[in-house]
Image (spheres, rainbow, N blue to C red):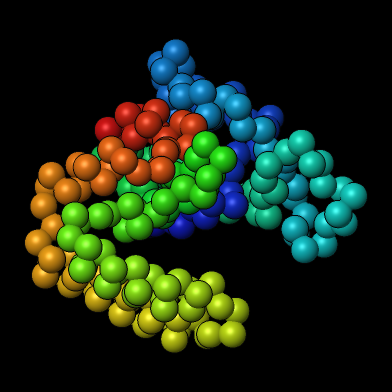
Length: 190
């Protein structure tokens, strides 16, 4: 049996210490980001809550505590070998702002050292990027456009002869950084 654990689901504050100890038997190795996050749990439907009921010092509201408990139990019972974490990268695992500037995307930081191909990729960015955030384009159509952009960009990277050294140089000169706790999360998952 599998359950989908959405990002909006997290443990009830009262249970957090117990769950931490059960999930992380050696509590000396609990990453700081687990200890810093506080949550607010509600047994009512989120849509029925009034704004004044929400405590702004808390981060997340749980809509269905029983459902979450079943999911946590299923994850725990399946064991660590069955756990998969699927996460978006750009502006999710990485910071949106780095040193006061908008952080780069993983594709945006790649420079081939070939001005012709870099210019072609920039032209694709200028065309597709506004479409990515356009509220007027239906999701299904937008998905096709983003896949088209991805395919064309990767085609240019291959055609232009992207090298390992160019990737290393691009990363070294980029404006990208992981969010606090991401490295510890990767170490925990490893």
